[in-house]
Each structure stands twice: as structure tokens, then as C-alpha cells.
Image (tube, rainbow, N blue to C red; front, side, top):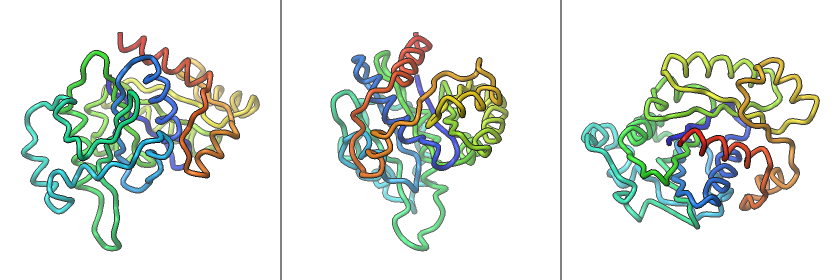
Length: 243
């Protein structure tokens, strides 16, 4: 199963990605985490994994990516992934598609093309799950990144912007023929009620409350070692859908 995690900036995509990957890994599954966000650099901290080299460098760097990705026709197995561009710990392996490093180096379009292609060509074993962390907003849906996915998880924080974006994500996901589920994040009892009314309880797959330990780990750039009941339930549901 391939899962894409999306949402507005600051809603907690990377946090939920890390928590879910760890929870699924605890159930003796192999988790491939794909960092497709060319801006944020904190996902490896949350996972407690060394930062891998940009995967785009395997293809010769950003300037060559457009032409190189056109040559990727065959399916990839996870055993084919080059070790120099993969970091791992326990049952989790992390791949970073690429980052913007220099002023004036140009747009992230080549990295985005690589991410979309990679999700389509990578074949998983039965005991493997891929979780892709995306950049903020809905541009990745416009690029067709979700074409290679099986499920979209939209992270919704207590803000009007998140509610409005949920509608956009659902509409675009429907066009792509991909199921989308909402994860309420950083909520309390009052904000959960408001979001549930706005989105519809039947579309909400999990609820993650405000949590000081999660906040402080993110602030300090430390590994997330907390277990959250909502994420445990989310992992159960994901694994059930995979079956």
C-alpha cells in the first residue's frame, strides 16, 4: 500500500507521517518513508534517522533529472534502492527526493517529476507500506503525484484554511479516483466538534489531540518517541485496508 500525506503548511504532515511510520513499523511491517517536500528538512529528526543524501543525486543532480526520469520505464523493487541514498532504523527506511539548497538554483519541478515517477514505478512486497510526506498545499495533486498512491490522508488542523483545503483535496482526489480520509490534528474537544461538523464524521479516520511532548520534540528537532491512541487506531485501520 502507498499512502500520500498532505495538507496545508503547519498542519503537522511530517509529524503524522513519522508517528504513523513508527506505529506501523512496531507491527513488524517494513515502512518506506518518502520525503517529497523540497523545503522542510526535519522529517529525519522526527524519525530518529540520519539524513540521507538527496535521491536526485543518484541520477546526476537536479539539472539532469528531467531527462533521466524519462528513462525510468521499468518497475523498481525496494531491494533495488541504492544504499547510499537510503537511511534506516528498525523497520523504517527513509528516502529524500531532493531539496532546494542554493539561492537562484531554480524551481523544484525536476524533483517533483522524480517523486511522481518514483511512486508509480516502485513495487512493494506484501509486508511493506510506503508513506509519502508532501509539500504544503495542493500543487502535488496538480502534478499528479497521487497517481501512484492507494490512499490519501489529509491532515486537518483547527483552522478555517484547513477546512477549505479539505474540500479542494477531496475534489481533486475524486478526480484521480483515490480515496481520501481526514486526520484531525492538534485538536481539543471544542475544535474537534467544530471540525467534525464541518467535514463530516464519516470521513474522519483518526483524531490526534494537542500534545506537549509532540510539540517539544518538533521544536527541539528530536525523535518522536511518544505513542498516541489516535495514531495507533490509524495504523490498525491502514493495515486492515491493506488486507
